[in-house]
Amino acid sequence: MSSDPKPATMSTSRVFTVGLISAWYSSNIGVLLLNKFLLTNYGFKYPIFLTLCHMLACSFLSYVAISWLKVVPMQSIRSRVQFVKISSLGFIFCLSVVGGNISLRYLAVSFNQAVGATTPFFTAVFAYLMTLKKEGWLTYLTLVPVVTGVIIASGGEPSFHLFGFIMCIAATAARALKSVLQGILLSSEAEKLNSMNLLMYMGPVACVILLPAALWMEQDVVGITIALARDDVRIIWYLVFNSALAYFVNLTNFLVTKHTSPLTLQVLGNAKGAVAVVVSILIFRNPVSVTGMLGYGLTVTGVILYSEAKKRGR
Image (tube, rainbow, N blue to C red):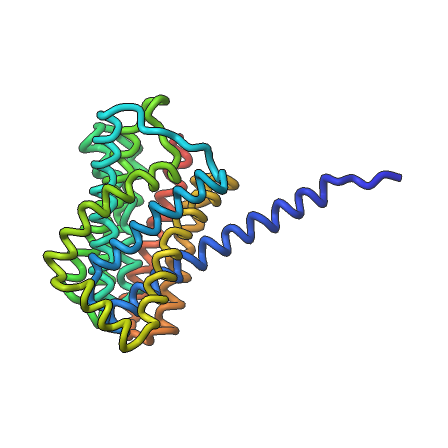
């Protein structure tokens, strides 16, 4: 009697996929909470420098994963035009991360996630403005609760901060713009890069932008960080771990997409936001109102309906 290896193989594959999703969830929520801890509770009020650390780690570790670990094949930049396109994407990606980190200084993680959930709205707007691509009426209708939910959540947010809210909206819009531009700029087969190679090339571009910005806007940030490290060496370990975790978010995001599908990633992302909200409330004890939670719930429901409408429209 020969045993069938297929059930064992399927079981191993399922366990691997669940492990990947768990790692993606943990790294996503972990970097979000650690960013919040560093920028508010710990008092390291330098979001641009923090983003610079993230980008350095993402570029270096992407190179290690591609060149040494052979996670994906190395893809080269083929022309000056392609380099300009990648640089443009790097600049917008940089704005989205900086904006998100700045907003965490002023907003609770729960409200930050509520605003971030409006990404589909901005994606639909930019897709129409830049490509004149129209969706079905049902898809646009599902965006109404997405936006309405954030308006309701804003009114019911006990720790609402206007500047933090503006930065969070800007970060969300930049994230959506980057995804639309990526589809336009790198649409030809010759120019397409997988997300790991794209991150490796975008990292140095972001660093070139962020370094002078940090030195100018966050004066003597390097000296202050060294002084902090002399008093409490944990700040160095916090920054190193936080930066590595920021890269791990991108790595697990890529692997989950590869082993499942972009649609599955989208659905899991919606649930991840809700988990992040609950965990952040338990850890930081930030006050929440019933109105705010209802608003956030409405936004998440709208995002789920939007995903279903997009799937049916294909």
